[in-house]
Length: 140
Length: 137
Image 1: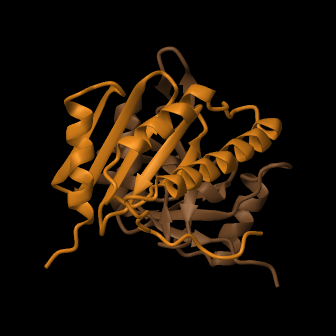
Image 2: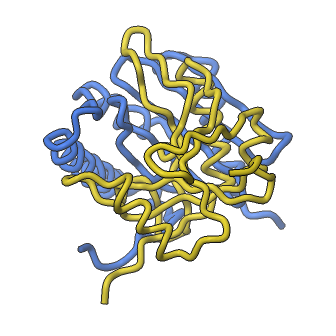
């Protein structure tokens, strides 16, 4: 059993790209291992394709540096999920190796965004990612 | 069993430590994604299996999971408790199933497409409360 809890909303220093890549790779390696273990014993779980891992790295490299690392998880239908919890809100993203990203933000009952677009999209995706730092900015 | 009131608590059992976070006591959205029924195009089951747990002690809740949900190779690590009212807010119903246990119910109807499912799963995860399986002494 692992000792110690993940410190949530931990910022990776903007200049520390090496650390950032190491953290991402470590998380994805853990996910890969857990998927393999689960697929060996459960028939209703689909492994995420390698392209989903690559897409996750690519997406995380686009995320502004003043946004904490997300929680990463495997999805039983063959995807990789990302999740943030800014305050009382929640942001989720999912990637399945098909060059599409699905994203949802819920701040409260009346504030919600959701969409799907190609990872190469130059309008919707950057606009969505640009909202993330705002959500983590501390209120005065 | 009677109609399910708004303040009744339902629970979804969780098998992976990646699907919840102890640090900030949250349930990840994946816990509330229904099973996929086809890959191309990706479509999802219209129902999600949960259990009614109001009025029974915690030990009995875990026992339901151990007997009726766990398998030989997949073990429960935590659960996500959510009120029926939070389910109803998302225009979903809670339908008794009674199998494999009289407290088994289904949240339905989930939409078939991925984006709509993820939207609902995200909202349910936000509304839910994490309960981690106590460690055996």
